Image 1 (cartoon, each protein chain N blue to C red):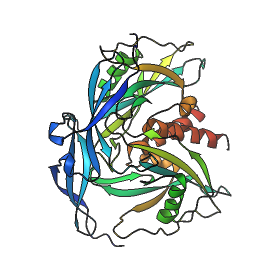
Image 2 (cartoon, rainbow over the protein chains, first blue to last red; image 1 turned 135 degrees about the horizontal axis):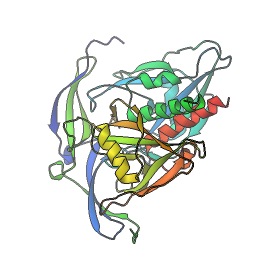
Image 3 (cartoon, rainbow over the protein chains, first blue to last red; image 1 turned 180 degrees about the horizontal axis):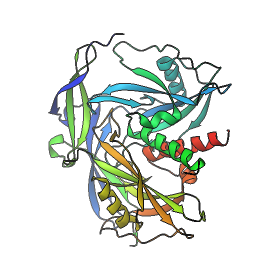
Length: 196
Length: 196
């Protein structure tokens, strides 16, 4: 799929909440710890389904059976209009449960998960500003000697660049906050293990 | 400061973008990789200042000079109306630069940073939904034998519960997505170091 143009935001306009299809603004009335009535403003996705979870992100662990390559993962690069640029993140899907995420992993990357290493509790993405929530699924993919990169099956109009990267190199990439935090935690534990 | 009431959200109403003080809704017009005109909806904080960064989070590393306690950090627990419950996260401040964060650390926790271990690039919090961005600052605090917990100086009407926790226990807490990802990365590197 040839990329012909550099995507870019050309203009921005105020959007009335009543005209928005995907997001709404809410005013929350709440009582605080001293019993006082207070208000809070937040944004909400209109798309949350019956599962109650907005999204699932997948951290794939590509492991060599023979230690032929360092533990690696798959990151994707997508133009994100709210950031106005390409952002690197994990594969994610506006859908649950975990099985849908595993199916999505195979469709988007060609990798087939051997097992699920971990499925996080529901966490909240930016709880001062939005109601958005998510789960993180860690999936194992066992490979032989070669760090194969199978073909993905992208939908028409999907522009996603897939990249395989060693986990300890993740921190040098321009990434979203969640993935950046994951890389910080990973590198921190490695530094500690080395006594730094 | 005695906590007399359990905080709770009592009602929710639609909010017109024109009546919102803190957040606005935007419609972005952009051109994609094939040159087509498209639109994207997102939420934006109205409070971003000259720095261009919405917030700074601080990961404090409490280290014992004598290995008397495991590497620990300070997490805070706050009622977050958009989540409708208490959420655990890192200390954060809607302000930059790093120096302001270090000052805030001392005010909110009583801990004085000895050095800054790391200051992340600007990352985007939830780039499919909002323009919100942030930096992560990792600060070292060296302590002697005792894991001291100095007093914080909270503003009136601030209800923040501070807790010291060992880094490798972080994953058992109910936390926001960024902190959860940090804990996942940390635990993953630890498991690998142990050959699991």
